[in-house]
Each structure stands twice: as C-alpha cells, then as structure tokens.
Length: 263
Image (cartoon, rainbow, N blue to C red; front, top):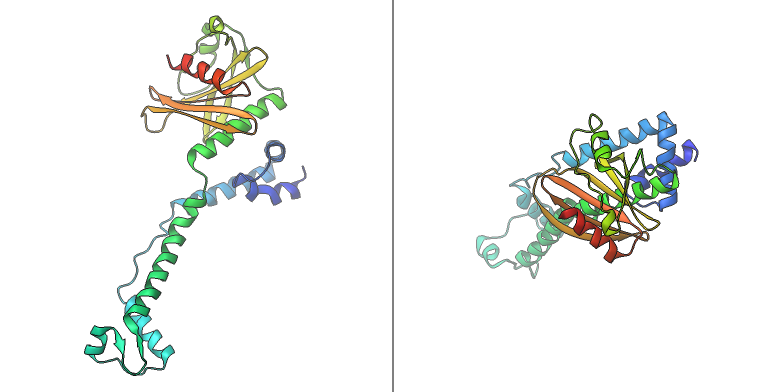
C-alpha cells in the first residue's frame, strides 16, 4: 500500500468500513511508515476531541420571539395581532391558524435539533461492535503474519510469569488439554487503546485466541456471542477482567471453551 492510498483510506479505516484484507494492509503500512502513522494518530486525537467537546447548547429563551417575528415578516404582517386573536391562535386577516402552524414549525425544529445531537451516536458503532472488529482483526492478523505466539509452551507455569513486567496486570493462565483445548502459549497485543495479554489454545488444528485485560468498570458482565467474517467471538467480564475469545471453531465448541475459562 502506498502513502497516498493509506491517507485516502484513513477515514474509512477509522469508521470500520474496510474489508479485512484492506484493513490489514493499512495497519501494516502504519507500522512501516512513520508519516502515515503520525497522520493517523492526529486524526484519532481529533476524533477524540470532537467526541468529548461540549457540543450541546441550551436554546435561547428569545428563540420563539425571533421565530414569530420572522414568520410575521414572511407573511407580510407588520403588527402583532391582538391578544384575543393570539390566545385563540388565529390571525383574522390571514385566515389561518397561527399557533397550530407555529407549533408544527417548532416541532420540526426540535426534531432536527434532536437528530443533530443524537443522530451521530445512533449511527456510530457500539463499543461491543468496535471491539469485536478489533478482536477479529487481531486474530486474523496473528494468523496471516505468522505472529500467533511469542512464548511457545503448554506449561502454564512458564506462560504466566512470562507476562511479568510486560503488562500491568497478571492474567490467569490454565491448560485445558484434558478437555480438548491444549494451551499453546501466549503473546502481547494491542486492543482498546492498551496492551493486552493473549493466551493461545488449540482445538484440533483450529487456533483460539483468548484476549484478557482489566475492565474499566470492574463489574461482571454476562457473556455475549458475535459472528464476524467467518469467526465466532464471545466476550464477558469477571473478577475485574475483560475476556474476548475468538476462533473459527463452531459456536458450540467455542462456548464450551468459554465455560472452561469461566469456571
């Protein structure tokens, strides 16, 4: 991928609109090109600033008065109608219901304001959607780039201390060979804006990636299943940790594995 292509694809990449192959290509380019990586970092900073900026404002109290005045000018009415006509919501010399029409205009304006404020949030992917895409991409990248494991061993007592000093938490490491899910090793990865631990297991010839990092809230969250690009994913939180597991094994086998991890 060239720098020109990478810069053209940045917005689509940030909005998760690229196919998996193109997404992996641009991620590889960011690793190799400091200029494009810097441009991407600046775009992420801008995106974060926009999301946290105080973009909501109270409607000025005189808005209704200004709208009424503008509507009167547009209708060719120079003076304010008498109080009786206003109370009835009717302009005698215009022959139409002012209050009803004004209410309709204000309602439409209110809907527009709400959509401007809420619409982007409704169109934006949820945190689960964003993370499921990140996890899927990381899993596929580990297979395509042949970087599935950093520490290769089935000994849980070797894998666990390998993470010491490399991350700021201690993941639980267990081997499930007796249940058909042998431990193959572990590695480091980067998800959700931080370095995470990845434990690698196998089901026959199918690799299973188990991502672990401290949860933001510390609350327990029940498991939820996803499917993306031919992979099955399950996420849950327990004991102050967030877990995501992904593989191309069938959904039942992946649920069986998730249950073993949660025991």
